[in-house]
Image 1: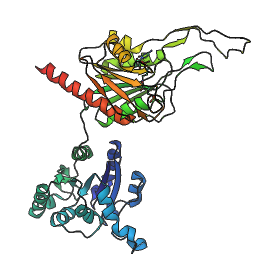
Image 2 (image 1 turned 180 degrees about the horizontal axis):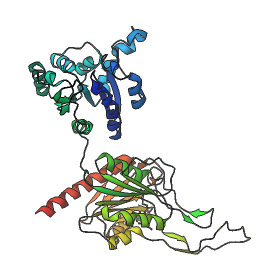
Image 3 (image 1 turned 120 degrees about the horizontal axis):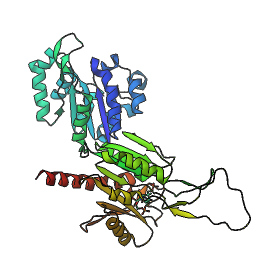
Image 4 (image 1 turned 60 degrees about the vertical axis):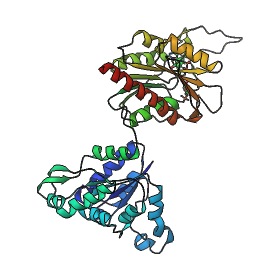
Length: 408
Ligand code: PMT
């Protein structure tokens, strides 16, 4: 989703730089628009560097871009491409222009041209904030559906004390997420996610592993974090870039993954086992490299620790939720249902890994969700991030039902 961040001229303009980062953290693409007076406080280069986009400042491209058709219609292009417009800080002047439909620069023209929901976070001197003109302008804007994030009280840059400090950046981000319909339905939950393959060493240079890229588990970690969860990610070896999460632990073998899972399990409300953990490992580990020998060789394998089976034996408390995967090439639903029962899971994600566009090392997946009450939810082919969100929708709903049952 794309958000335009309007920055108008006040000392709080510098805080908008951090706001760019926080909005990006929610997965939003941020395009910054600055008024002329905002540029007295912070340079467009700061916002261009942070947002990765050219900063819109002038209606007609400024001195260098004057008369060029792209700049003349740029505000319309931005207006049509955004999902929300947030103005932080919003000065009394910008609020007045918005209330009266004045469009004399890029930002105020964008305000008129867009149909996206608007959020304003005013910041100004206390007398300006309390002035009847500002009050009436805000009332007009509220009536039109503009969301207002009221300023905080405190010491103001002008030397006075009172209301007028830019609201906390967290509350501005929350207002934007609400306007966009982004969910915060997992806030307060700790979600433990496993991702990627494991590697079981044969000798000091060889190992047994599988084709898991970690993409599915990383998509869960990213989606859960964006929905407000505290995420503990335990990742097997992969070259994929991990999302930023509360805790990231890198492990190599099934044994190390089990050890990390059991170290964090007591703090987890939900456990999602998306990792492709080894079922077998070499029974003997050789120090150094095994020499090439003539003729066929036999390697003895022994079972690796089954983390999910162990988890179902050691469940911390009722209310902790465990979601397993079942990667299958045949009899998908029957085999997945057997895993659901055997490992006493709350949900199993049956993953058809026989298809080229699903499962290991691709960006899309095709799964069916199975529940202990016999419900099944087949999902179309979709990107792994979307799969993660669909599974998390079910997790959030089950958590909500469990919480309300516990209250009765
Ligand atoms: O990483 P990607 O390239 O994005 O690929 C995603 C994926 C195909 C790896 C993922 O979608 C997936 O299906 N993960 C589960 C893979 C797997 O090991 O499935 P399984 O049917 O063998 O195992 C069943 C469940 O038991 C899984 O939740 C697994 O994490 C768990 N398990 C398995 C073996 C073991 N020793 N301990 C376990 O806990």
